[in-house]
Length: 125
Image 1: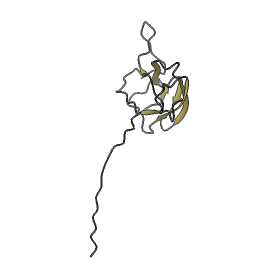
Image 2: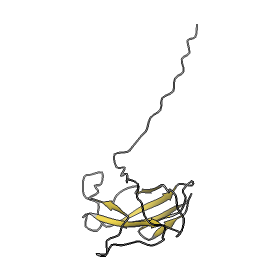
Image 3: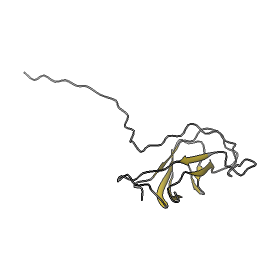
Image 4: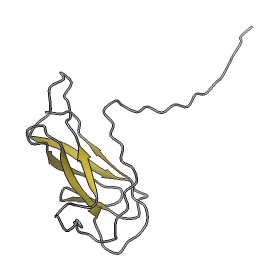
């Protein structure tokens, strides 16, 4: 007699190096808006990032910006724009390992809605 059992399991895998941003609200302009003291309004803030060996990542890091294909508009991060469904290579300068911020804004003016995107650094240098 053969006993057969089927089951399904749902799970979410979130890697330990995942950084999630809260929803950013900004105006629908394709420029980095700044306050009167020259601080960008919408930014990706990176504190010290550590490599696998525990040392602090410094200097230029190769990354990929990907915007979901169902996004309402493209996204610009640190001067590199990706439209919905696109992935673009960019570099993020982590300097000497100190905290850094990188401006984020819509790639096209006048569009409203929600755009989800991801920045992937395959391996910290």
